[in-house]
Image (cartoon, rainbow, N blue to C red):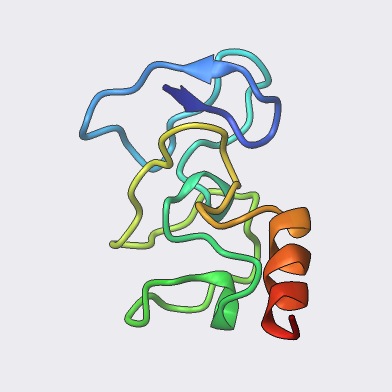
Length: 94
């Protein structure tokens, strides 16, 4: 399931959607960092793809060649939640 990072509504896109594609729910751009599977708040330049160019605006359409639409909730990393990280940290000292 693909969802819009701006409004949270499910979007239907094909494999080769264009840079100017917009969400039917909110009218926001879909080819944005927040919808990309490589987007990561904790990574350098907020992107896990090391070859990708820096994007100043993460919520506006861009020309990134490495863009791949995020599966599942948009803008979410596939990493443990905050509670899990704290538990792992505490477990180090037991």
